[in-house]
Length: 363
Image (tube, rainbow, N blue to C red; front, side, top):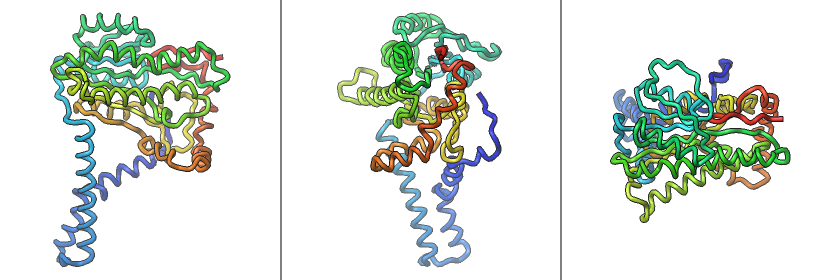
């Protein structure tokens, strides 16, 4: 869902970081500086040339270290055979899931959408995308969908766990039904789909890719989101545990061909958080779902494992816990983390809150 943004909303710390990354913090640009100095006759032993050469060497070393770190952590990318790849997207009827389905559908990839409501879109160019009515919070629904998907499209090789709901209530206002529904969709559904589809990935000659869409709030916690953030924290722990199992010496056959991607975005511009206003559009910009979808699809297409955190602060938020408790409290107040949900209640009854399930009616 595109948002109506003012021009200055595009001026963010993420934009500044991107410009720096592709200019003075890029090895190619860094090496141009001493080379240009030498081309105009600056002595090779001058302080200017030596300092810029040292800087270029440092930037190059950091890039190489990052490259080696990714290789050691995640290994070589897997090779994808798009003639035989089958993508499952939970929560594909709207928001982020729908965008990813459209991206793959336009390319002719076989895609299975699991949702409780049917997506609304033009059928032209989407022949490879099939909808399966499925409540992923129920294991029996996931198993039933698997049988039909394999019959229609073939064994699943790419699983994008994206379904989610938000209640947006203080802890004491949550009903037993609210809590159970939250954990069924936001956490247990991932266990259901993994136990259902992972065996076919392990058996595949080309392996498979698992995408876990969690949230940066799983690392923070937030007011009026105790159930949601608890589930997302569980997702992060579950994903890391799964990665450890796949890398262990006792891993099942085929585990070395499985790639995993953990997605921990900040606030997305989707109906899921309608009415939530970001405290700072510069330091904590709202992420457009199409931008996040493009990054997820890029990493899946490349056969890579890794983490995706957008915007920039989501990559560094864990450092907040290094601070003393008092400074953490001050930082949260200055960032407005715990006041961001105040506008959410006004939108409860006006929108469906699920990216993959129908929103519960809120009183």
